[in-house]
Image (tube, rainbow, N blue to C red):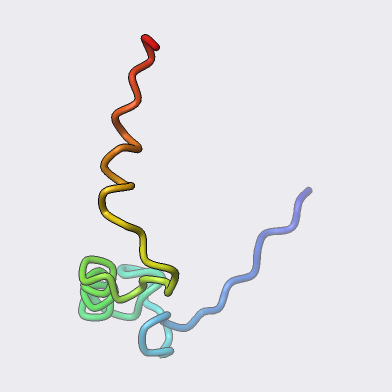
Length: 65
C-alpha cells in the first residue's frame, strides 16, 4: 500500500485547527479570505512585465498556414 501524504492540520490563513466542514480552513470566513486573495491577485508571483501587444498575438495563430 502507498503511504498517504501528511498534511498540516492548521488553517492556511490563520493557522488555527481546521474544521471538517471547511477543510482545510477553520471557518467560512477564512475560506472567503483565501478566495478574495485569489480574486484580487494577492497570490501573484513577481516577474518581469510582458508587453501587452506581444500577448495579443499569442492566441491568434492560424493553423491553415
